[in-house]
Length: 274
Image (cartoon, rainbow, N blue to C red; front, side):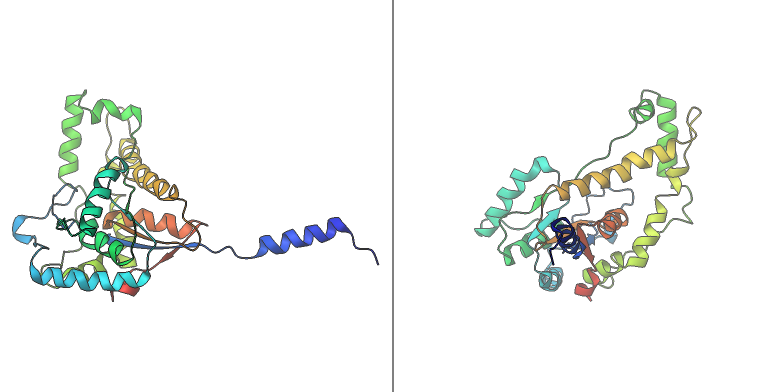
């Protein structure tokens, strides 16, 4: 019996492409900012801050690092702009040589330590900033000074404060690990997402009923899509394991992107922290 070559090839291709493709595993660690530079919307007063360089916090960070290192990342990405890559490569190399004391920032306290344990050559700077609609520029750039002042006043007063989700920090009372577990709880991340649909999201100007959604699109959604694209540019192999260290607020979107992507398999960092 003669076989139909076309049929055989079709069946072979179907079998090959029907096989599930291995996805690159990703572990996202959403963190508070260890250095407390207060550049985010929510500020931490001096009396509520901690100094992560104190011995008790250093011991706790070392424990956190040991737990997360069990993921065995082959790639680590941090919340720093790509144009700072050379700077962070230099700092990391100095750290490997024992010539640099880690600063307070989480990408160094956690990222540098894990990278060293895994014998990685670099940490990837993948931060990005959003791009606003041009129609918003007259207000955002202050050309329309009255509307700019109204916007800033509205932003600073946190409209819908009662509805917004800002869990009380527990790093000072229960420790850094407890705080990270709270921030990376999937229910908390989902609730945090709702915060971006309140407050400034509802802002309107005399000329634009959708100023708020347009602003949040550029400020937050576009920014995180660009961060995600920067991570894609690393061209990780399916056998790689990516550790993402970013401010916890980013997890509302980054986790959604990783979870939906056909390229990545999102793991739960609390499986390592608990």
